[in-house]
Length: 445
Ligand code: NDP
Ligand code: 2IT
Image (cartoon, rainbow, N blue to C red; front, side, top):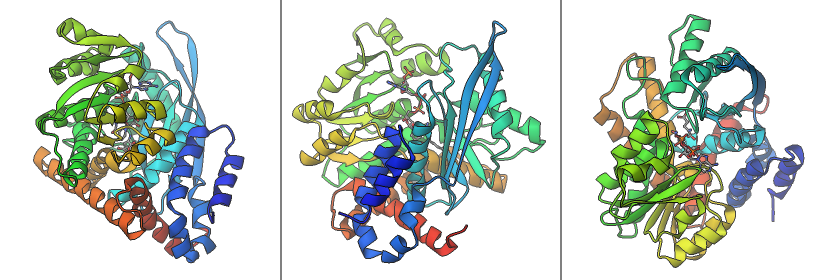
């Protein structure tokens, strides 16, 4: 080692106190050593140093008034990481744990994920430390309007197109879009994940979870396996988890567990996804409520125990670093043979190492969960055409995109001497397109 060690050292020095960002960068740079060896022109042109530095970082005050008439202050972020292959594209996360380092890790991942989709979208991410939990619709609206009043200065359909992520779903996108339109007098595809009557795409709601399952189908098919009859554990119970659950069941799996940040449910005869949708999407309540509908299910406090449930496949769909080395060892000991990340970076580096050493099939988030942003790009495409495709048309495109992503990652891994390593494959395949574009566009762009 190594050409890229210096780049990593600089990232740590220039971005102190941001461990999630360091983790995401380290994983990518580790995969790119051989690329750097084979492409000295990229080293010379400073592509590696440039790609780890966001093009622009915006931080702003978000004042709003709660239902008691009290002034509240949150912090807003938008990191416009890389626009080499298209307008910045990536979600907004509203969660109390959000700070600049989280948004930078997510924005960095998004560069490579978006490149893997094969569609013309650059990488960005944003959000706030605002916690929508327990807030009234009016409070959420007040917050979203204030947030967009500032954000609107930096985004646009050809500049930067935000979408949802943790804590940002259809309700929030509606308030954000309304405020953007009010401020700019312009009905435009500046956000994705919009409602179906005002520019949204069919299948965008389902896309991340469905796409994850299409990716897993390809990954396990290569080893002669399928979802049919497989016991599947899914973490989280939000947008990604719900639609991963639905599609896995349609493909013949028995999904036996889900969780939220308070605890998990184990329903051995199979999760009832309509109940989960009622609790989480409509009532906005906790997953614990599930046992009042299905008394044969078991609820346990805390999230850690979910990895002790014996399963064939686990799909972590909640948040970063939820599966550590110890949890990975337990999963392996219980016979789990495939893991695919619906969330962004839910497995720690130690967990990924355990999976690799034990021959567990592993689909990294930037490949496995790319179906959401890919369908966002299809929404942008429909908005540009002022046209809408049917659910089946979008779903078929999504399925083909996920197959191509799997294929592209497998081939890149093989080409660089790392056969079967989809982490390396995703990083290399995602990087190559962006690097080529950055190289072609010169340094002071
Ligand atoms: P949601 O807000 O719809 O759901 C998030 C789920 O994860 C909830 O069940 C939530 O539980 C749980 N969760 C969040 N934070 C924590 C935590 N700190 N500890 C334990 N559980 C937690 O978000 P999404 O489903 O949209 O996003 C889930 C993951 O998927 C994120 O990593 C996101 O970045 C990623 N992703 C999302 C895409 C999308 O299109 N939405 C696309 C690609 C990736 P609780 O309600 O208790 O907070
Ligand atoms: O992490 C992600 O890819 C997302 N939250 C979706 C981003 C998008 O622009 O649809």
